[in-house]
Picture (tube, rainbow, N blue to C red):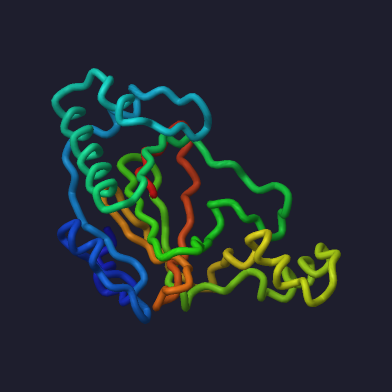
Length: 232
């Protein structure tokens, strides 16, 4: 992890799962990281899993069925423990083997896929949890280093051209198509890489939230390399 990471006022770095889930988000603080150095061979797990689609959900039964070395078993135990911790906390974790995500080719001037910096939204109080065990890692972006894409004059003009309804319906149109959730980095912005093995909790846009939602994006995958990601 970047040596300047712990200085970021946006992020709380913690040492236990209990601290992770109990950190209170407010003001600029909208991300928490359970910082860990995980042992075990996660690459072995990736090499023995079957990719059925570009994104394949791996069940705990799939994971348990793998024949692994001692180091592979150690990595598997870590994943299973994280899965159980999140489940016990009321979350619904999913373990994903990822070759690539689906790209948004409909709106090329404002793509709304996960490779774009974006925030998550929920009608209820919740958070996004994620941990990359292997492969390219996600990034977050400090809110003051980002601009909502729909506020960029050239993009907003194209959105108005795309909108065929009445002027008073324009804001609903933006929300309906998730355009309002996407951001672009300002010049000189410094995204924060989330690193391998760390379990993250990111603030989501919901009615009871007392901080700004955390802006994040999925990475472009490395050629010939899959990602192993726990997310909920």
